[in-house]
Length: 212
Image 1 (cartoon, rainbow, N blue to C red):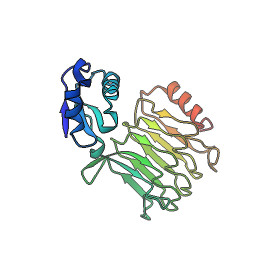
Image 2: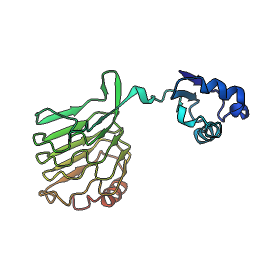
Image 3: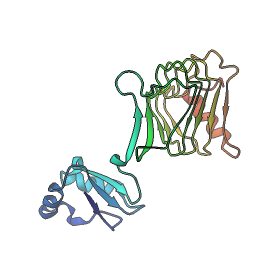
Image 4: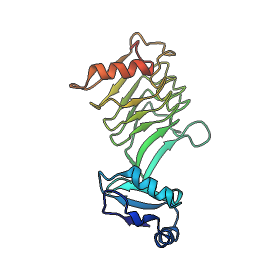
């Protein structure tokens, strides 16, 4: 179910007994829609004070809910990807759901040489490419917002890392580490024309990719 609020801040009556009963009667993870630019932390605090935070998901209008999104992730036996192709594009949508994150998706793969993430994917999770011994090129979309710790590490054969976004994604510790790359002296990082070279350089150095 969905409940919509028009105010930019939560109403003072949110935590009354009547409203508490209204929301507690709804199914778990009710989607609470608030206007774009509204004070989401204040809404979260109000629902927390009402004892309802675990039963809701607060989203801006137009923001996809959890049941509309998909994480391409490790399914319990070391890899989410089972194919043997040398080149692969991870789609932005699968079975009607947005693909927003990959997580250990290609861990241990022995055949892939090139992987491109489609525009719309926002997060590269931990160990997504760990042990991809043949992987030579990764193309990252402009929509990318974050590379988690060790997100790109463990790619010994990597020769090219291409960023398509002008904005520098947040990079965790060793997220782009090249310490295990055999070809790091030949490897290159490509960023788009007009991107902030200094900002990218600083972020990549912090992430462990300064030799590239």
